[in-house]
Length: 599
Image 1 (cartoon, rainbow, N blue to C red):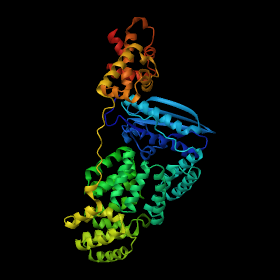
Image 2 (image 1 turned 120 degrees about the vertical axis):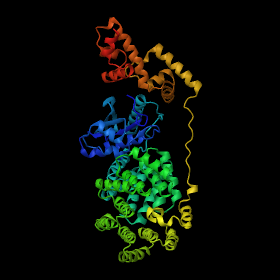
Image 3 (image 1 turned 90 degrees about the horizontal axis):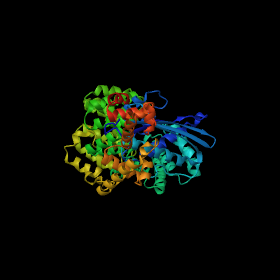
């Protein structure tokens, strides 16, 4: 039953079904799902599929095995939530995807006022069952912290996040309204400040609000969240975006982006942003590492797909980049960045006329005017169309005189580079760099500026803009074994004696934690000893003893009147499927065939 090492400690939490009488309570079932995802993501050795990819399967009738294959996970968690008055019922079950059987299920009936304790209890139990099934995980005493004493504030927060996850301006405004209500009830609710900052940064980046106003509001809420909890990964991710897109401060952006993934290793958006930062500064290996991590966590995300396409473009693999951009636009025809960089791919492939037609036919609401103008200018320059070049270059120069026209600044720089006018390009760069243009920071190392790379001034600006030699290097400290050799040997001797004398494996609901209590060894240490010294997970270890006990019973003529399943239950098994699966794995044959061969 053991998976390949790369896949065995992986799980996807599917959206819990809303079983409440009121369909509007869906925000609550979605919220519970997200909280469990976030809690499990705090376990370092466990890879948890992100919300975006898990929620892709919401309300879709797709076989579990297919879902697991698409997400590349070994285990699926599914469940339901029912609210009635002030009580809540939550059900959850873990499914071994490859063999499609449920190896654990549970139901909780609790008071709603204890919602955080319920989430913690569920998350810990799920983590325990994963550890028992797949091997060592180091699990904290608590996975969910109580974030507010005000239940109404928490409900407003869940409603706000439910709306913001729809990623459109109407729902983003609704989210802002709900986050503000949450904060009015609890001024110290960090997650609501993070949500407000995120919502305003959404409006800033999309320019659906005046950029200056939106970024200032976003920064105000970042600072409040940071003051309440400087170790919040979401705050550092937002600070990274602010540092890059508003302040054009590459060093600060890298600092905060790396801090975000340090605090939350299962954070796909932060890994994507780190990938982007390392990519534009020329560190391809680190960029690729972060991108692969993001893709493993969030394989179905359209944003991850864009970053994969962009990575191919920046590493001059234009054909594969074009294929991925086409896929991105098929899935989301409103993906503005994909439209823009797809046109760059066409230019680098020499398909100038195709690029021009593509840009001219692009819906006006799909692209910033300066973006279209700049891309058309580059197309005409590379095509060597003098009339078109003069026409678009003059318009571009006029737009670039405006201090806030960052897109025009960047495209004028790229235009000079494409025309091999190095002096004009670097002169313009020196002028606009003072305006803190993040777009220029993004496009300075773009393949369209390749003509400048042999100029000595290019290396100087690489150092000035990115300071590559000063980029923080995160050394992963070598973690010592959880248990030293002498103690591990003592623990194993103690465990073996206890198993032989007390036969705890006969307890059907024996868990790793309950066994740890019986032998007085911390669960994390017992898990480590089983994994490192015995080479088995908890279930394999215990079921081995159960199978040996079953063999003794089955071969004893006194028990001929008892069915094989009855003997399995007497040996500590509480599931026919689990018994048959482990017996076949351990013995290499079915229980019935074993008896035929040995009686």
